[in-house]
Image (cartoon, rainbow, N blue to C red; front, side, top):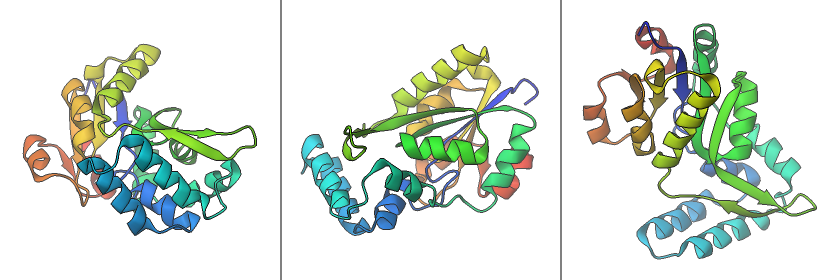
Length: 215
């Protein structure tokens, strides 16, 4: 642990609660999160093609009349962090350079980073708006692990910190590529964390109050 200089933090279901920020957003915007979940499951299983799934989800949101960028920013500002997450980040910031690398939506990653006073952040999902500021599209990848690894390398190139000088805290399969590159992988045990991942990663956190035991 003596050579650790930076901590890479996952956001969704690691710093946030077990309910994914996507679903929190859908509920907060006033749409049906169960419909959202069904769209996602149909996409994962191949019942819906990427574009059809994406267009269906955007239509679900648009019906609420709250898809202007200002509305979306306000909504994401209300997504909840886990108990103890902010205090844990304050503790880590005193010792390490911090970076959020997330598969979540870029606006949410940006807002969360500002709330937590984390300078470096990278997001896999990009919201796109028309000239009037209304949501019209987004970029999303079902498998985000390799992109997260690219973000890690970009962060290391920017800061001069080696991957082996980083710890990484994440809860799921998309964090595996980063876990394989850093000096200290730490698994946050979320509700949806796979059992096989728990067996592979010995360093684990069950809540943010335990952070001083591992870093």
